Length: 472
Figure 1 (cartoon, rainbow, N blue to C red):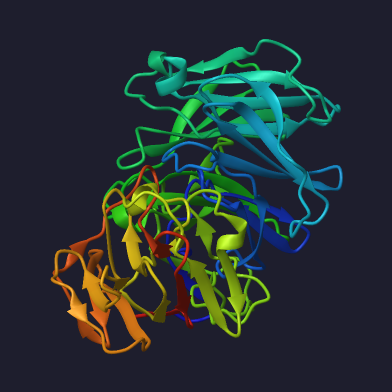
Figure 2: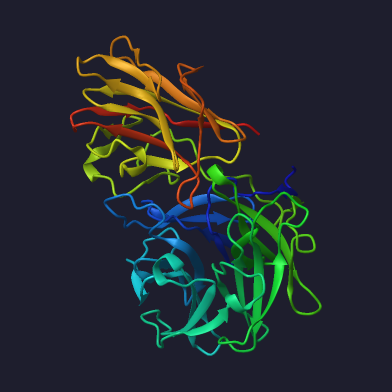
């Protein structure tokens, strides 16, 4: 690939349910984060291909791990000089935060429409000053799905102004199932809802058009797998460039690697409908939308030099604030009490598993009582690390492997190599240890690389630089 072309995916990790906007010459993107803390990362780009993380919009979390709850499919918009992110929390309702600067500070979440099962929300501020809100439904809480509802909304986002109108009942559309993730737009006087259907693994992208925001809507499938190897190409956002071109960013579900993000060219056909990709099928390679950009990617490695953790990190739930610190170029985690099951432990500090083969390393010292290490966590979990036994001896441990004594209190370099199938080979001192582990996806998320420390609160794990070497 050269600087004039790109290859999909442009974000090759679990950047789930993306939405994207342009403000001037800058592009911004956010994704769903469920119960990760912090959540709602804000990514920035100048060309839609090279992205960096610049902050987070949501710092509130739960004290316990709740897989699949929290922040579902957000919508990012810029209106009246402010950035807005709307999302549905299926156990709370439709929420939003806003900020003048995408780097923050962001407001505290505001619930604009309370209720169970309200998900995948998107606002529209119309030309006449009216505002609207569209959202989908989660059958697990509401008892229904496969339909979209539009509310009138106060222009300041304070509240919805009616009970809502069912604008699309996809049970009435042949072949449709699991219609969700709507994005509401207006173009040339018509209202457009971009929405995926068919499920994340095998679905497609549809577009709906109406002369009134309340319908009736016509539908058309505009992107599907076809003869490509891109399963389920759907759910994302439409964005234009300063030169007036149109593009669509969407995800593809890759199991343990999560929902990776693709970029498709998009044009408006002579009949007024959008055409995505290559005649409705995803492209593998294409020209860069805005030439001249500098290569960039979301951070992965972290030297722990501070003053804060790299923006790629998040906790599984609220950590105890006093249980970690950055000091002298190291990350120090207190060996805090909590569930032995890493999937249920709030104080696992994780980042997205890269979508390409990679090798991850860090150097660990364990002071005092406890255990700590490097983990891969999804629906299943495994780790390599150090543990202080009851007789005070330090041992190296990995899965079902018998523990290996470690001389003295010296530091040990631990790591993992993850191949193209997400098969994990743990490492100690640069050599394989234990049996290979097959990484698995979590609840609507990919697996994560995690650091943890567990115990009675008296021990401390000291991690030196965390390095991710991606094979390209």
